[in-house]
Image 1 (cartoon, chains in turn orange, green):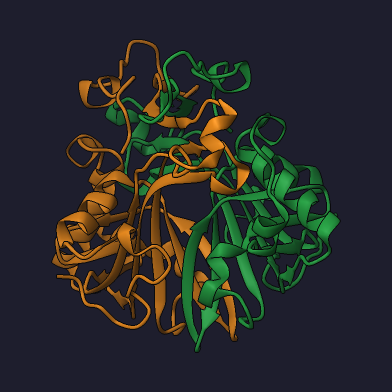
Image 2 (image 1 turned 180 degrees about the vertical axis):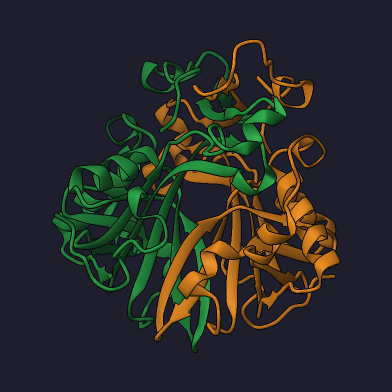
Length: 216
Length: 216
């Protein structure tokens, strides 16, 4: 069970809250961008960034840390996957189907060389599976220039909304209006070669094979 | 020009920063979910939410405000559109193409009835154009139960990254690896009728016609 602290306890729409760590990992596996919330001089700042994760930690690329994270203390990392709109008979009952995870904690800089490589591989493979074995891996110099942050997956809140409109058995049903879901589908497109790429180099299967595949 | 304050000045990747308000509006027009950052008891919290906007303000549904916004002071609202991955010859040069906008300010509750309707219409039409005229509009009772927040678009930072890998003319080019972009394409899917919908009610053109259309 994920911990229930005052802020992760689900208040508004109780039925949407999940406490199974498998749900948290599933949302992280489905998302490609995290929104990192930090407090700078008392003011909130929300920064989009890529991430990776295993069952214990989420890893964030430290380049976003330039001024935002170091010494900023606690953060909130939110990963949201939009699944579609809920179109009801009344504007008031409209909504969104989504999966989201909010993770709270104080991130730690990853400094151990093995752990740094481990976390970078997770980050790379999360976005582009197969690239870690295909592309040139980081050199010692590059690793020294890389900041990676890790946040434990211990305090988290997961919400999943996958319903239909709630006015189908109310008075508005008599309006005779269409109601339902309008899904959003994100897919990988066709690879676009770097203009500097010499002729004859084709994208490998782990890249070309993703075209048309659904994200999340 | 968007204001340049210390936090909206672009530091890390200067070439990505935009100061034209038209860029800000274009990112908002392309995004469907905003991530709202607030500070609660000194701790950051990042909440996904739908939004609407005109040229002057961004509107956020106040249901997210239950405990997060009222009295929380300044917020940061970030809207991010993911356009794809940048796959380089080296892991170190990998990146993401995206468009993002970060808006800072103290949100105001919208209480004037006309302004409330105006903002709600923007919010509704942003996600589901045509629904404001098709679905039943909010009743007085529903309006009284609706909280809407408005944030001026005066202090904002816009970043757009749409490049190719940067190692195409460096030593790694000799590796002979494929490099380029892998786009992410989000499209509207086929409408799914509410199970409670009586037979014979078809989705109207403003809904059915979106199937296959690209978001953002």
